[in-house]
Image 1 (cartoon, one colour):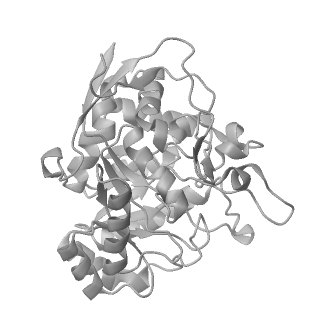
Image 2 (cartoon, rainbow, N blue to C red):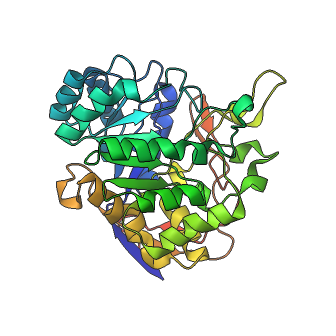
Length: 354
């Protein structure tokens, strides 16, 4: 049995910087994807058009066979004029991180109202606002990792009401409440879903650092809501892997004063993994929409517009016993992927193979 997908697109991926980027950037293509929507939370974050173009050139040097769509980091330095400049240069979106909720988000926002002139400019030039949909934990308000996403949803509704023509993506949804919220919004609001959140629930990361990510996986009913909306084929829900690599020592180790790193690394096995998971809950027929056409339609970036790396990727069923690699190594850098050592039911057919 085989499946072909025209130019799969990952609409949320972290490609880092420096030597680790040399290892992970080629994994976009290795995992079956030809387009990567790249997150800006570097050190320092990508806040200007020049930084975004420099970062894009760095990625293209590492692997020119992928189309990289670039984003800016929402910060006080970002102005309406910079938005217009970025749009003309081909930057696609702006990513908002609430302060301190995930990796490299210390410079994140605390209030959206201050950014309304920026959002107005984004609406005017038709750039996308990508929202990390959580509020910071606050014991006094009973806010914590399990309800941080539902607590954020009033902000989504308020932003959508204030800027009804602004395209907004609620990133990496993990709850039934988030799915229902996006459905209630108009056609300018969409939602990305990761592969790992289609697999995990809270029990899978409690005590298991390799499955720990932000936002955390929630309850079985929440996972079911994500699976249901994928199986439904809803056009405003699509893959954004949030593949977020961290060195093994950062993932596997915590101390009394420092938690393990938050992030799950799926890039090198992404398309086979998504096929494996969708097949497990009866949604394999929705694969191409979920990893391609839905997201491309929302981002107004059809396959015909892709300048680099366009390709039909073929998957085939694998025999029992095919497992995901234990790690990936380049020089002094190494990474352990999600699903390491577990069986996976699909593989990519290399070009020229039968």
